[in-house]
Image (tube, rainbow, N blue to C red):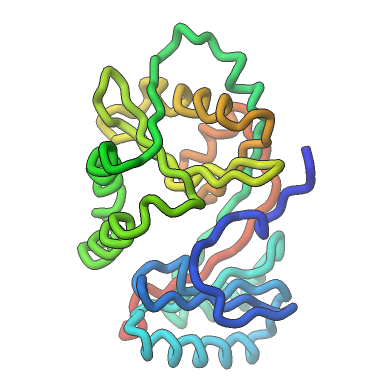
Length: 254
């Protein structure tokens, strides 16, 4: 397996400034999509620097109609108690993203007689099926974000990367996944199965199909460090590679 880091993870947001210290994403067309409007640190700032950055980001976001603040800290950098206390007092939610990888042979060795899944790339004939599944995953994040995400999808679904797929079981759309192919990896993003059909082997079967498409590439994904799904990935053979703290304040007015 080649060296894989968080920098290999795809982000289709617009980069407006980048240097050795940080990358700034600012995407006016989707102001409520957090990961497309965020600052990613490559070097750990001190608290005074971060507070100046926070003020700068707030001005940028207010100008384009974003209501949130978002920061990602350097890979494998622990935040001490002082940092966590300051972020909490400032109204930020602190989360951890974890990077995992697995070789495709892990899934290709599965018994093909298990759950049968047909993975179809999104086009004009499968777009609405993708949206039906996608909407269920978006709704918990609010109406504004849901409608923004679906509008953007309708406008850009033919653009790659990512390559978008719908998973069918007995001709019924039950799951979706976006794939980002590089020469050495295939990243799984937005991967999910409808809640009513989870724990039936569908997710594992989808990954078997992705392993075929991978053609030897390492399969990678990012999981929420506090989500039980990461435990499932480990059981399926994924290996933990690294982590990264994220700080999010969903409303600047709070």
